[in-house]
Length: 176
Image 1: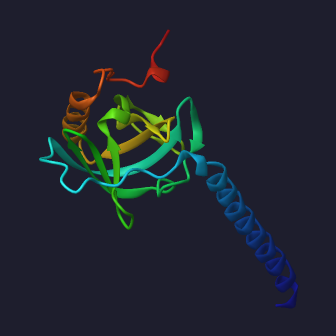
Image 2 (image 1 turned 180 degrees about the vertical axis):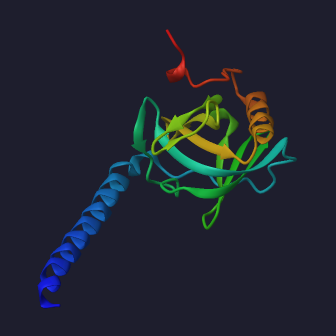
């Protein structure tokens, strides 16, 4: 038994150090992104939703930096979500967090994608919302429960885009 104790303790120390390092890195990322600011709060009376869907919130990443997860404003971790599209914006209610509001004026793209940080799915299995968080372009990825939910959600978001700039496919996935 004593011959197994030392290797077990060494592995436990390495695991603890790795955990502390990951936590420190996550906190450093959050501090570095603090300038992005908070996500807007849900308006008191947003109106009647044009679409509602249950989805897996996958991630929000910095635009053109698909491996840079946004770690602020409660957007850093996957969660089950209820997404509602209203005339004035999109409500994103993540389990265990305050509702986030993406004003329609901040939306600048909507489309489908097949991958984002740590998640690859079938072609066009993710809904991608392009918007500005504190003036910084970001992309939010959602995985609706069904293809019909994805279509309904995407159509509703495209209907409130300020310049009607919408695409069915993520621009980074198009062939040149």
